[in-house]
Image 1: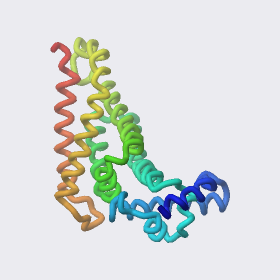
Image 2: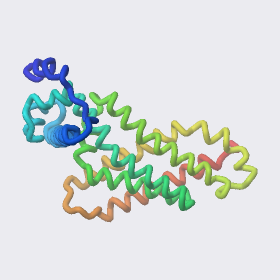
Image 3: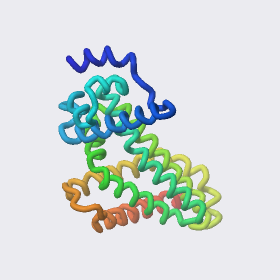
Image 4: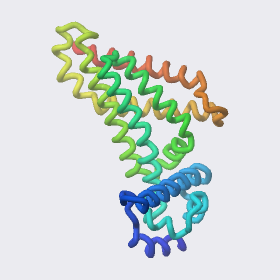
Amino acid sequence: MADQQDNSKGSEEQVSPSGRGRRGQRQAQTRLQLITGARNVFARVGVAEATIAQITAEADVGFGTFYLYFKTKDDALHAVLVEGFTTLNAQIDELLQEAKQQQQPWQEALQCCIRAYLRFAYQNRNLMQIMFAEQTRLQQAEQQVFLRFAWRIVQLLRYAQDSLPETVSSAQASELDGYIEYPFNLLTVMIVAMLNRTAIWWLRQHPTKNSQDVPSSLDEASALVTQFIIAGLTSTLSNTEE
């Protein structure tokens, strides 16, 4: 109740993190502290049990400061997830751009993106923990995170499509345009679901992060998932006669 009462007082004076100059920099830094604090608290005790007091204590800011940046705890959760996955999306964008510039085979581009995702999961264990543990209350934030990442998978599939004339015969390639467009959404959901389940399984098999080095077993899992998806895509995208 105290959180809700304070919320009604502070929400009217929320600040924008886009201010300029030193004040804007301080606001951006404070917001980052709150997001980091919320991320740590949510991962440690869960969103339902987390309190604004815990978040502000973790962030080392005053209690009322929270409401200058977020109206509710769920707003903070939304920011934790959406901004947390921004780094991953930037990595995927960079890998896809590099693949196109270097005319990298789509299979190699796929493997690089999958490896980047699983390494991100390893290096951001608490973020993944929040994502998977709080799905029942996430809906809007989870949808945004999914759509932003899924868009990258669609770009990857389109890159594979552009490479198909080199993979299949000319006769088959001429028939693929209408066929390959249809399953893009379905293929994207399937790939994202597979990556998520793989990340969950691997993190549970390795409950602690013991070093800064990425374990070889994670890259082995990445290679296996890549082979599985390549086999499925090659079969799906090449089988136009059935």
